[in-house]
Image 1 (cartoon, helix red, strand yellow):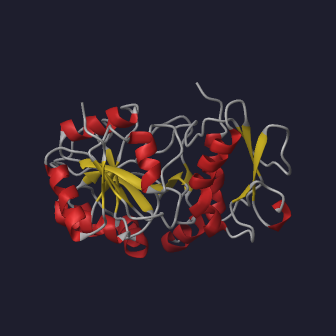
Image 2: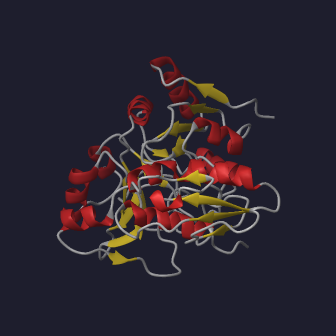
Length: 318
């Protein structure tokens, strides 16, 4: 039986302990600027299989590989001029690029779910950077939560969902961005595969062209399941008031009477940073038999990522 998951400080000693656990095939959750990731050695079939088992994640859903810099990423995938431009503009940061897998990459086949592409990210969080530098290799790191549930933006969220299933979590405080990375596919036409922490408008400016939308029904990158990011209570969207037994999550000054608020001033960056923690709080307040209602969110900038997560949180569940 696995011992209680250790909580490590974001100190040189704590990071060194985490890197040692990872080298031994262990799983360590760590903070990024988006959400907490569940890290395992991306070159080890055993470690990657343990990530899927700990999360209860379906094996057809590929994983994002985290790296310390673009040079390390180029050793795993084939970059073109578009990838170079986006990496230069947004790495380190909340952007994931899906690129053709380079022959001899050394990655476990489980990471890519058998696809000819790989999803790569260079995180900006100083703890993530320190861990990647010290570990010295690629880390497969999906969000550190049970598959399909609300993503973790604090260390306590990780232990609530995965305590006893993983070796450790590094407590780096609350995540600043609060929604997962934007994913762009560049193995053909440039496509938005998942909205996230980098607004689409900024990506299109850097590319000098619009992004196509992903092809419906195909899982080509992490985070594309229709029902995902879900609390226990059912979720109703675009709510201008609460119904009986609902906890209303507001946005902007017009939702002053809401039980919880993503941003009282209508700030989308604040709303993104608070989204997953607020969903968890609403779920707790709703209790058995309760429900959650969420105020309308503008479909622009980070609002696209927020609405993407909310639509999937509200999707019918199998």
